[in-house]
Length: 228
Length: 228
DNA sequence: CGCGTAGTTGACTGTCTTCAAAGAGTGTGG
DNA sequence: CCACACTCTTTGAAGACAGTCAACTACGCG
Image: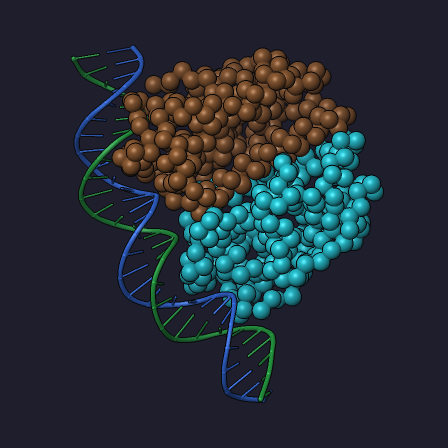
């Protein structure tokens, strides 16, 4: 079952409200030259595949997208979940180095990569926005690196729940928009370990699970689990 | 013992020869406005610490630098090794999110971050260079993510050796410029596991260890170990 | 020469994975 | 509306890979 969730990370909501650009078709607020084309993908549909020519870049309007890499024996690592407001699909080089797929039914804006690059070459403001975006993504990737390299299963799951909560508005109660497999492949664990860890966290009173994918976090306790 | 190694990644050597900028004091080739100040750090000396104000950015001229994060119980994750030609120290936000330390005696150029940002704001070309650099670093971080999330100890060590070889010139024979602890903290393993894995790879004929930190790779066999 | 640090090796432990099976939730068609 | 099929999730038992603890070796330096 695909819970009908609209993923609206607080920061993005705030930013788009402030700048009044969320329904707009531009790449960045106040950047009228880069107009995207609306496009939709169904649940589990591929946006682009690893090795394909990177002709377009994307901005999520609604829904969610994951990007991942796979080894030839099937091991998979998800490198990021992209929520409304997020840009993805940028590459240094001609080909995509990940596969991107829609988690749920998803609306995006598509921009020709060449057009974005030309705009960046002409406008320092655009280029700086793109630089900032890339730097921000780098920070997220490095946080994931620490998580994968040095954290236990319990810490990974707890950190993940807090991250999702924050991006979904920070209410502490929400439905996980992804399957156990997606969570496991993001956290470098197996689905069984994720499941067991969630059960353990519930038993420890760090969260409640009313049913389905819904969770209600006890944030203070979860924070104590991660406690960096 | 710190083997006196000059780390000159092939790609950077090529680039700097082509552009004739390696001994220069500029941030990018053909960008005379951004002049750095030469500076030196001794072995194991800290360049900047996590949480410090990010006032400067750095370009490695000679030697090597590592950036890492630590958890409060001492677990450490190295997120990158920076070799001659590499830039590091860029942040989105006021504070450094890593600690940077010199692996060996290291020469760098220091640039005021504000100056770089102003230059980027004025020049689309500079901003695009910075964007490209950040995108490239993002790619490296995501490769590390896959390594940490889904690869076995043997695969990690083999991939690491091939990466270092490539960045050191690709001859297949070199001395590792970092300690076992650094390797372990980069690969998300313990020093014992790194040591055992190296011994196993040697036993399997995938490499030789003439002594000290020197290794001589059998690249074909190592490639078969990684075999993505 | 002896000390301190770095690296190797061994024995044992523990966390996470693997394999297996049962349970829960969702959608379909009679 | 319920039976059925399907997928997703949970739980259990056993095993494996990497970690921990500890001893020993090699190397570099005063």
